Length: 115
Image (tube, rainbow, N blue to C red; front, top):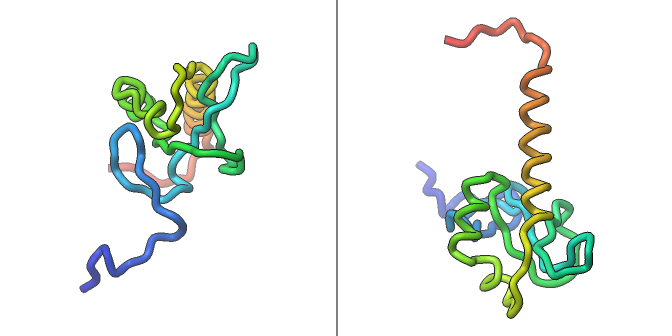
C-alpha cells in the first residue's frame, strides 16, 4: 500500500493562495506583480510561468480567485507594498472559463452514454 508521501508529484508542488491547498504548479495559475494596459500596478497572469520575479499561485477558478482577493493574499505573497489591481487576472480567468464552456458545448458526440 502506497502512502501519499511516498509518491512523488509530477513536477513542483505549490500552494494556492486562495484555498491554501497544495497542487502541482501545472494545475495552478501563476500571478506576478506587473502593470495593466494603462501602466498602473496590477496583478498579471503568467500562464507560461516564465515572468521574472516573485510569483503567487492560484487555482484558475473564480472561487479561489475571490478567496485570495478577500484574504488579501496576493499582496502578502508577492511582498508588494502597493495595492495591485486584479483586472488583468479576472479577464484571463473569464477567457479560460469561456474557452472551457465552448469546448464542452461543441464537443462531438462520442457515442458514450452517461448514467
